[in-house]
Image 1 (cartoon, rainbow, N blue to C red):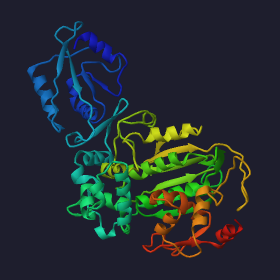
Image 2 (cartoon, rainbow, N blue to C red; image 1 turned 135 degrees about the vertical axis):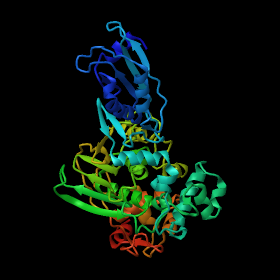
Image 3 (spheres, helix red, strand yellow; image 1 turned 180 degrees about the vertical axis):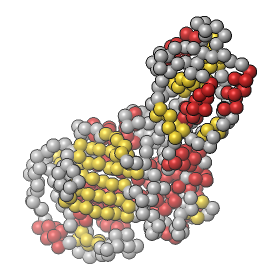
Image 4 (cartoon, helix red, strand yellow; image 1 turned 90 degrees about the vertical axis):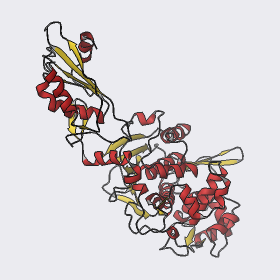
Length: 491
């Protein structure tokens, strides 16, 4: 490095990747910044510059100076190999500027400390790293020891996992070519082990989050849902709570969207196409991302869905990876999954596409329907995805009335939709299992059936559960309500 390069480097004053000190008498404070550079985006520590006037003064450099620098560098752990450069100062013969460059932090490596304390950089300021930030980096550096999803699940045995859910997810993975066909017939324990859902032979937290029916010890396996009146939280029209594993919460969240968002339909050729005011594909992707990437170790926090008159918010406990911002997440990027085991299982079973494509898929779905793309923000330890609701004239449809228009808007996924009508026509007045209902409708996918048939039909009050207070009852069955029976007879 030359003195001209030093002048160019300090031209814009101190910033996120530059710190200047007047002499080596400030080395201790300089090492705090060096540690911060190593934990953030890297940077230059330049000694021999007057920080206020930016005059290049340099200082006398002796063998003792070099030994002092080496001594201070040993206070950084893990050890770093930094070469100090000594540049002559023409205006001050005999003096030298000392320049040291510290590499940027690599996610997944152990965080750095100076004298056992970690620091990081915020713009031109060096700050002591918070405990949460430090522990997060420790977990990322040694996931086999510290990652929440790899820890053994509390009081959850293999028998507590919903095997029907597991097998159904595997079937989807096999059909899409993401899993070997042999997975269909392998023993459950072997399949779980291959998916890294067992730790020392017992279900880990990732397995519990995805498939457990025993959520007694998991307050984070809950979903808050509210339809607020107006544009704030002063009063609400509907306020619900759901609890369960990933699939239970996904079903509950999508049913809530269908219940409270308007639905429009039009005839294209001989087929009726129906769309939520905000694409269901975008909402589903956003909810899947929230459930997949949330910080589950924050047991006292839950995912929330808030529907207002003008917008929809999905909030998830967590932070963006340091490589991404609320703006760059909208651009093509590499994936940095917070829970890689859960993300890999969801990818193999087709609930997630390629890692890193989620935001793009959400925006593409919105653009295809001419809906404004959402925004991403962070607030109070939550990542919030906000969709704007299109302004539409609301036209309600009387139940059972013949649909004579090409476009209608509804606040409920009611019996006039094709899916719910098909379900009513296919059911008898006796109780039926989910499997029997799927077969009666001539369908195969249980996941889509629950999302697009059962949940909207329950919300519309046209079917009822045999065990209404126990939605996940192992012998749960459904039958038509009087309302649906009368409609069916009228047809």
